[in-house]
Length: 80
Image (cartoon, rainbow, N blue to C red):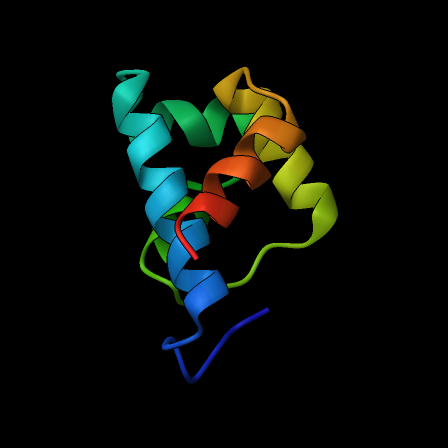
């Protein structure tokens, strides 16, 4: 979902967690996009707080990162 206001604390925490986790795993946006079945542009939009993912997308991202949704959401929650 495209967003006009990117000052939402939850969205900020999600974006930071996505980028941090991807970088810690040594994955490029391109590699994560491939693993998650998404476009590089979409990964970029998520990391720059311009889109909010659906639950299905969150699942795809977590699968691409090789972590559980619970782990990822816990990391997001710790940043709130």
